[in-house]
Length: 273
Image (cartoon, rainbow, N blue to C red; front, side, top):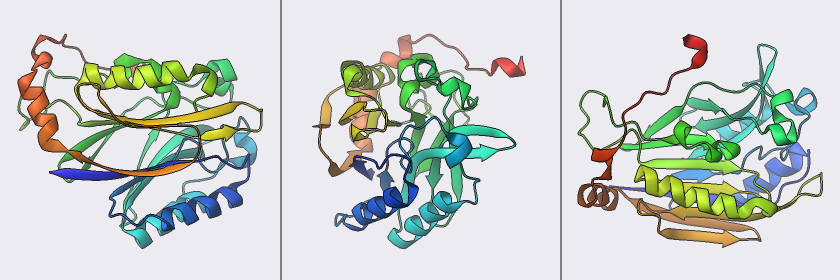
């Protein structure tokens, strides 16, 4: 069983929603390969801006409606994060848009305090593991990458009907605006997450300078369950399509059953305790 992803590594127009949506629509329309999931960077409509009071939208706003239209037209799942306002709070929200208009979402758990993201956005408290064609995809955003417990496969107890060793998910996906000055951490941690969770990892980062003159080198990557690099693009814009193989993943987990030796734990929301 296979699943095909298209990664869009691109520069973004700073705080210019209309230009970004037009540019991204042109890039999506240029994809000629058969694909099933198209991945955009973090805050793809604005760049990593700390002005949600100006640019945040409701869930029925322009950008989510744009995603719904594109997903339906291209018959794809479209994902990426944007600023969302809800109940008086602002979220860096990853949208998982299905072709039929069904929406899943994940609110970034770890706000980047170094850039004062925590002063402008509310942190999420729930993971989202999406299901597509028998694949399970753990959706996360940028700075979440530095916190391995939030991404860790939980092997025990397994949901009813799953076989030991399958794990909670098969793909760990990050969308990002990760600056070039810390790209060694980005590349290293993507590979580490793949190795420790025995899963595919996809990281889609922007490129180019943002409105704060911070340069982003891209370095979008796909890593296999043994940490092998299947794709890496340093600097420059790129549209890359890759098909992942579920049988290879199962073979790796069977041949190297490291999950048997893992610590058991449960991730809980401290607010619920």
